[in-house]
Length: 364
Image (cartoon, rainbow, N blue to C red; front, side, top):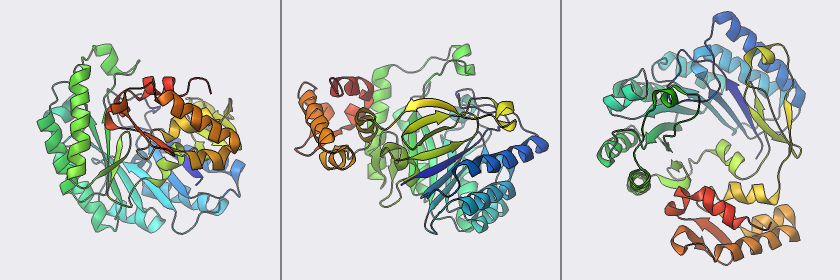
């Protein structure tokens, strides 16, 4: 299920926790960027794609007209079926029904917006410019424009956070009638304002309790977990993100964007000017190994299947699955679900997934 990711590297202001590549924008720079992004797409013209995702940054900064124009260019160059999942991210403070209507007419059928919290104090802490009501109005405007597949982001493990605040945010998001919720644990990334300010996060036990509470509460609200940080109503799992986690190919366009195509991994440097001047992506070596495939699939609640390993890697894949199952015997049983033909993590296992993966993939 190959996908296309187009990075829109512009933000009106930087959130203090964010380490994604973004820069301030002007109309001429945004116009030049969309032209260059279209030109870069030609390198892979003729490819068949199932999903397209515009991320950022803040994609809505460039306007619905430019986003729709980029999508039209992609549709001209690639084979994209009518039922493809076409997503853009958006900021609740800069959008309205007219914006969403233009996107819908332009071919977009899925939206992802950053609510982060329904608590005013937490939103101020996170440097967000919107209120809970701004986010609610953005969702209502998108629904009125015809969008029936919407995702909201939430954050947990915040300084001063609690299960009660988290519960209110989850109920707020679910009450808006969205189909998908992503819930991320806040991390202090090097080089971010939060890092320089010395922001202190809750201890690991508190964060773990919040995460497990989040999994249970979202299930109660009708959102089944399908990946470490992602939850959906039945049939609304993100097809684009599943492209990454199932080890499928994808093309990434824009500074900081990564790709996996024809067995190779490559990326564009985090340098807007270099991209605008036609800089080429940097080779990042081969991809698609059995170790990588196992690691990615184990991010999913349905986990790693012998049948998938056999289909993708033949006998070597089946042997690797056996080795992983053997390694799993030495892991605490409450962290894993071990079946004859499948291995998956429990929610408790997801909390220590990096350490588990080191043990499970040993000897491959």
